[in-house]
Structure formats: C-alpha cells, structure tokens
Length: 302
Image 1 (cartoon, one colour):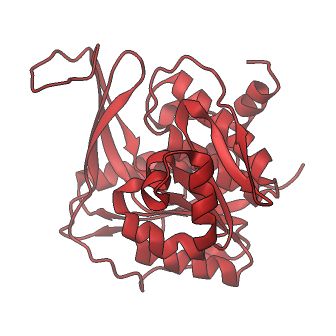
Image 2 (tube, rainbow, N blue to C red):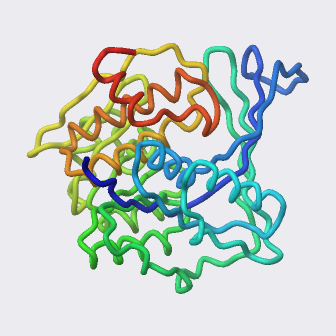
Image 3 (cartoon, one colour):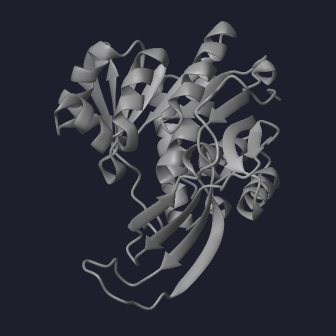
C-alpha cells in the first residue's frame, strides 16, 4: 500500500450557518427558512477537510480568534482529521463567520465576516512541519502568508497551488508568478484578463504566470492550458443540493492529485468528481466525499 502524501493549506477558516429557502431573494423581503445547519467553512479550511477525506496527511495554517467560534472551528477541523497546530487563535480576535442562503436548486448566496483582531504579519508562521510535504495550497485572503508558504514549499521541493478568486484581485496578481499551479474562478479570470471567454482568458494570463494555469467554470467544466493550447473537460452532471464549498473541495482534491504526481488533466478530472459529489451530497464538511467514494464515482459505480 502506498503511504499517504502530506499536504498543507493556508488561508481562511470560517464557522458557517447555512439557511435553506425555496428561492433566493431578488429584492428586500422577509421569508421563511425551511431549515438550517451549522458547519465549518472557509476556503483553506474546507480544502483541508477535502484533502484529509481523500487520505492525505493534512495541516491547515489559518488565523482565527480565541473565541467560541474559533474553538468550534478547531474542533470541527480536528474531527475531520486535519492538524490544527498551525491554526493560530489570537487573543481578543473575532473569528470569521458566514451565513449562506441556499435555494432549492442548490444555488447559494453568501455573506461573510472575515474576522478581526490580527495583522497581516506572516513572520510567526512555522514551516518546519512542511518537511516531506508533497504539495501546498493557499487562497488569496492573506497574500503575505501565501507568499511565505509558497517560498517554503519551493525550498522543500513541494508543489504550490493558488486558489485565485475575485475578492482580492491585487493579492491574486501578487501571487500569480509565485505558484506552480494557479486555479482561477471564472469571474476572477475574466476580471484579470479582460476576457469573458475562459479560453482567451487563460491565454492572456499565462504570460503573467510561471506555472500551470486553469479555471473552474462550475457547470461549464474545467479549462486548462497545455503546451499553448486551451483544453476543456465537461463537468460531471449531478443534481445539486448545495453548491457552496464545491470550489474549495475542487482545489483541495486538485492539490492532493498533483501532489501524487498526476497531470493537470488527471488532477482536474479527480477534483471535478470530488466537487460534483459535494454538490450532490448536500451541505457542509459532512458532505465532502472520501477517496473510495470518489474512485467509485469515477469508475461509474455511483
């Protein structure tokens, strides 16, 4: 049996409350909620849970408050099998929390409090536990930390992956040349490249990157640039119960796959399957599929 690889994620970690409604609001109104759950969230934390579920030994680097929400984030990460010794709880800090509204189609609307009570200083980060790590993933939410972990990964021969989304384009531009793999959201790619078409967008941003570039387009599938040519992989068709977190699961699964030595195409297929299962299974970290389930799905058994 092949030993599991080691991976690390860095970025935000949230405590989320998910509310279920028949339809998302289109104007200011009051509406009844059909149900609600509390779960873990955040880009890097959700990706870390996905990595752990897929069998990787996973450590998460994040900044949260020394408060009740932070304690719950830590508890849920540990319950999912993620190492939390690099999640720092700041005295007086307020942990990130989100509210996500999900309609019957699975589409969602999210509101996030990013937390407060810490600076962007990254000098406290301890990368000694990265020795032997195959791959690292960082989101855009703390570019100073992301730049530091990418440098540490390069020094150790580990692959680096950037989750590039639209909420901080300046951070994405800073990190773009530092990562071995950059996986864009469709909106982020369009904003950075000036092209709505993913094919044109990837060709444009490739000149500013030093590694592989790709983009997730939700139901539109996965695009990546290979030897100067843009290639496309359709998304797996599933009935979505909740699309929230699917992109984070994709990035986590992609990081595990490239860490295991898979090509971008192979990693994209593996990650697409993990993301599709997340959409089909429901809400929260509890709905993130494990390795055997993803393999069965890819083999057409599920």
